[in-house]
Length: 245
Image (cartoon, rainbow, N blue to C red; front, side):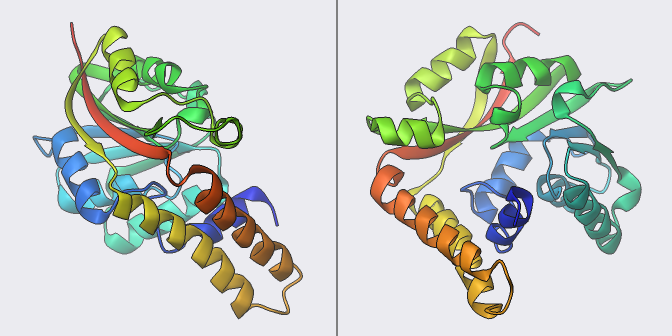
């Protein structure tokens, strides 16, 4: 089973694919689209869950999503049609770093996808190219809440603590106008959901050739979370505006 298939199973019950609950997502979107008629872009949209929620809530809003996964975009398109918002959603199957548009956007999203651009600041640089004057960026990034072990850094990446993350963003010319640090409940709910969904699929499909692999992966990932990074890793979501727009 390839990575995309495994990820789809893991996030079946948590389509936002980040450690955020529904209320946190709602509040972040409200701070990102204060008027309700914005043009929104998601760089690395996956199944389009952020865009679908924004479109459902704001009938005057239009949105575009970019992702390399044909399967995820197909899912987003089908969901948009089912929800009656398909005419306001455009989807592009390509590398988000290569995406270009003839128009700018009032909100640019990239939550949990900064690895696609090589980190936090390169992601903000990519977002800046698409941002309309006075527009906002909604970005989600991992942080270290305590000093990580070398194993945790190797496993998850080269993050910084919350204060340093915000300082780096500010030094790059951005001002946070809203933020949310995922709670312990959000973080734990996300991990339990991911690895529980994988395990459940394997147990429900014992005759599938991939069942043993999927069940083993769920056990490994659950142990890594509990033993390596549960006490040190966190997640911050920031709504940003250009300091000197």
